[in-house]
Length: 115
Image 1 (cartoon, one colour):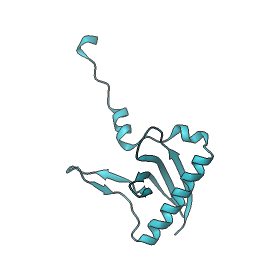
Image 2 (cartoon, rainbow, N blue to C red):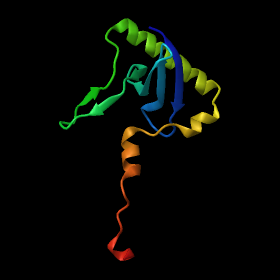
Image 3 (cartoon, rainbow, N blue to C red):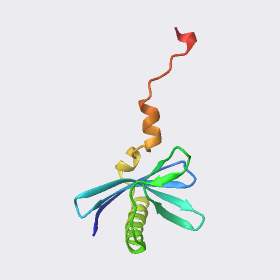
């Protein structure tokens, strides 16, 4: 298995969340919404996850061994550092988080005063 493409979308004005990332594996499988997080021990890559009804988070996709996790993390963090050193225009159009997309798709509520 090989990570054949990494795209990183830096996030501004966030304390811990530094970027979203998308990886392509073997030019045939895409994984979105990986996150570059500034943790207590430095940067790390969090896998895409979903919030459960009980408030916990479950990974949607994740490596099954530490070797694969380290390989993905090293490639994503290297691309993150490269993007910080040479920002592209794409960085201004970072994908929204799944939570913010849900907010954007909800119909606006009319206030009683506007009717």
